Length: 277
Image (cartoon, rainbow, N blue to C red):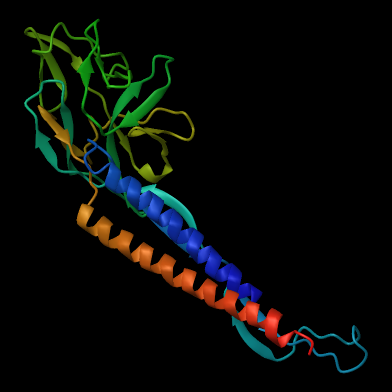
């Protein structure tokens, strides 16, 4: 019976964590470039129970090949959460510093069983590189194109993009025209297995090795366009997320009732069956 406590409790803990990541998805449904998370649930190893023969003195002639009693499930846990790197809808803002990537042809990684993804490449003031799909950029006092949290947007030459004013134009291939001159080209990075990226929060990702991702420009397997005056919306399906959230609540309540039933049984066993009269 005590094993039932553990199974029900693990189910409650798992559904609580599912509720937390689904709630986070809903909270970021209007965050530009946000990639909704999905969970991977796994069961703990199942045990095969067998009766051990003790025909003689206890502890002697114990055989582990006795009759099979059946399997024993030991509960469930949430193994990990991974972002879904599907394309979000584009929303027009007519703001020159708002930039969105429109994926057209992205190769599928058969070994990793996932589709690749494109990202803006950013540089922290300390020089470290990060990646994002949030193109809600701005200009700082020196005219550098930055994110709202201070990361610099990089060009294909791995240099920070600097323009004279917000009247610059960006072509579909990422080329920047500022006051009639070519001010560089936006770098769009490509990851053939985005599930290996580490999520840091605020829409930022980094590589596990610290190595920079390759550029998508010039790759004949990739087709994309850069859209100025647009932002990519979150890819969270709010209706589906609310449905999954209600399902998680129901599963939590079901495990809670099982736990309460075990508790009542243990109380009866301790107070009634085991009492001396």
